[in-house]
Image: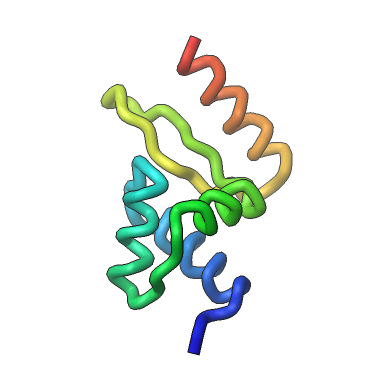
Length: 85
């Protein structure tokens, strides 16, 4: 049986909070490792809906972060914009 959207998004949040995920394809692979197979396009839509943002890490890389509140989402996006400048 195919997992529901809620189950999929819950798993995405769990993965992003517990692992350092740098790319959407990395997230697709992490989902696959848990037995959930989805396309990158589906994961991309979920990332937007969940307010997951990519932020710079201290070592010059970036990773996805799940923000808890809308204010944090805006702050995360600002951090992303300034890190690219």
